[in-house]
Image (cartoon, rainbow, N blue to C red; front, side, top):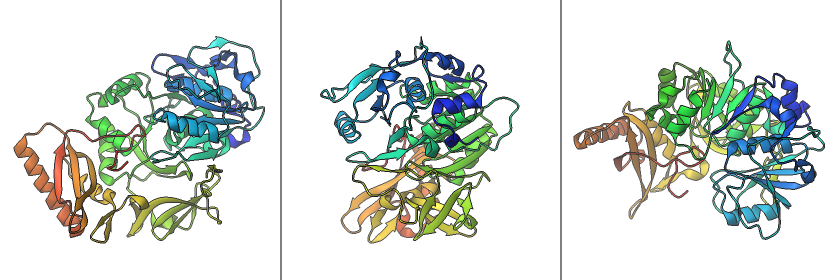
Amino acid sequence: MQPYEHKSLWDAIYAAGNLQERFLCGTERVIKLAELEQCTSLRGRAETLRGRSVLLRTRDLLASALAMIELDGIVRRMVLCPPDLKTDDLLYVAAAVQADAIVCDGTIVEDLHGIAELVPCGTELEPHAFQRGAQQPTEWILLTSGTTGTPKMVVHTLGTLGMAVDSSVLLDRRPVWCSFYDIRRYGGLCIFLRALLGGDSMVISSVCETTTEFLERVGAHGITHMSGTPSHWRRTIMSPAARCISPPYIRMSGEIADQAILDRVRDFYQAKVAHAFASTEAGVGFAVNDGLAGFPAAWAGTRQSEVDIKVEDGALLLRSRRNAIRYLGKNPAVCGADGFVNTGDMVEQRGDRYYYVGRRDGMINVGGLKIHPEEVETVLQMHPRVRMALAHARKNSITGSLVVAEVVLDEDHDDADRTKVAEELLHLCRSQLPAHKVPATIRIVSELPVAVTGKIVRHGE
């Protein structure tokens, strides 16, 4: 059943059935969905929020999940605030959405100068007899990730957010979903809604856990479907807790999934590995399930899974019912006149496939020649010893910039080993890339920074 047929998130959860068998799992407790029928996580305050514009601001993601379920269909507007949102930006967002209440769990409290009433939430459920279900449509407001300056606010509805994420895996037990993503950002929210609308359960991530702690916790719940960025998965297979999980279905999105990471994760877990394209503005685009990087060139100019796909001047454009409704504020329209969203992701056709080469706004200029750093990283990550790579610009008085790179190897190494691998990597780059794209230097490092979004932190971000 499609989620847009339901008037609220709770209506859709209830219609999916088996509430007694399904659960949401946080860091400290497991809650059966059946408990939500006659209990509240908002201390009975949901009715006081009817028709209002609400900020959801918590540290505990299970508290966020419970509040979303209780508030959808009741509030006029619900703004999902990520944990790294600065206080000044929070004040800007609150004013822009005309917020008159902030739902918080007490762990993150800012002075909103009296513009919003504080309403407590949490993971402790209290008995409360009230009528759940839709009273009015709710706007879901998400903040785009990786935005510098003033946050962009994107308007969705349950219908645009809740389109199914097809796992294409048949199991002899009910699926248990899990994601490295924060459920208050687009990627994590889609997995969260997929689990709830599909009649399944979910183990929810935490901003307070390391990769190892997270893997140890989720492994105890028999997860079957797990999603994250390629950077998440690179860190996972390097973790001492990597074998704590054994999901039969793994999904990557948010960054370019090159052939090396697809093959490594598939072989490590003996799992079906898919990668998908999605963005806050374009919505869930499409999934690639054949185990190969890129996507079939034949998809361009066609409709795949109710999504129209187009490549124009090397950019990927998408049109579907999953597109965001609009930006909130004075930002330009999400879609063009023809209804397509320009994703800003650049692709290149090689043979019968299109391959992602990077973001339009992330190119390095070397003497007038443009380079996508992701192209260089893809080549570096072809080396069997490399687990993560980052290419970026370094200023140069002659060419303006040079390409340099840092890489993380798969195990401990001494100086001689580092030198040997660096030489091999330079040889590999020279054999695969034009001269201006070959890194001027390659440095072996112990780790690379990964943002709270799960994406590798690029210089200048």
